[in-house]
Image (cartoon, rainbow, N blue to C red; front, side):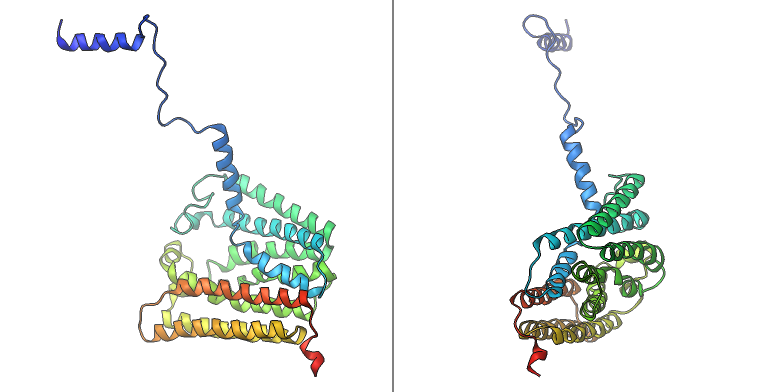
Length: 334
């Protein structure tokens, strides 16, 4: 017997065990994921369709506006129901946005891991999911608040998907200027949920977010402009110099701050102090970025993106505190 045959025979015998029975097969290392793992992955993919982090703006904007609409009072049940309806509406808009943008999401490194881009969810399933979320949003807001708030959310979804995503985004650098109006709607929805109407104060807050959106978005686009270029999306940083982009950011930032100061007429010194201090700080940061680009220095636009989030959070938190404390309005001293 050759050595090779003997070794082969020994291995064969070992595999049969001491009594000649066949040993259990070793499970493969690349086994199919378990059912709980697949369910968890699917659930997370559907959650990702709603862009949970983007919905944070909904919370930042809606709660303070509702408190301001009913100064000195806190209706927890109505706020919770409005947030739920608003969350469903925002989730619907973001899901339908991903359906429309699936082709360019695959081309951008920043978005390549989105559910549709990596085929974790089918386009048809995502479309149905988005419609179901919209119906849920409409039903919750109509039942818990009023028809006006439900209609405003529906208009937001239609504008975000139909106007911004399908028309403006791929055709003009002003896409986020006008398309950003969709992100301002929580101010109107929150006010309408409490009062059933739309007054001057939510319109001012609408303008605050409207003017805030371009510098916020362009700061991020400066960081990922090659992604947008590869996807064929004409964001301003793709088609213009950094100096021009930051100059536009300065203009819109000052428009944001000025708009925020208009609201002082309906608040106390608490909001006034917060608006002045936070506005001056944010404007100085954007102004500094503009000076750096003019000087040809290396810039860090992502810092402005993060600071813009901080500014909006501080401003609206100041408004919430002002509304709950309910001190005499500044106008009462004149």
